[in-house]
Length: 89
Image 1 (tube, rainbow, N blue to C red):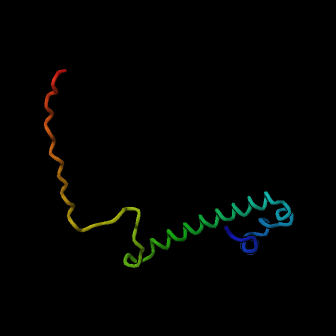
Image 2: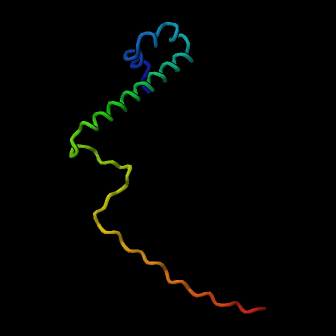
Image 3: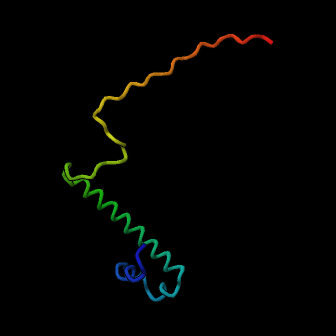
């Protein structure tokens, strides 16, 4: 979260008026609201920048997991042991 000085510098004047600064609860609500708006704005900006960026300059998408050009290894199942009848006791 932005430090108080930076919040006062960047936020609109109504978000840090004298009334707000004298009420800790309202000040925290305004700071959190401002932080949320800033994060949403940043997310939209980075999404737009990602779309406009040339493919070779984009960072790799790590959400899909590693991509491999190698063939998948065959997995062999373990041979099943036949079930033998149990002796009656």
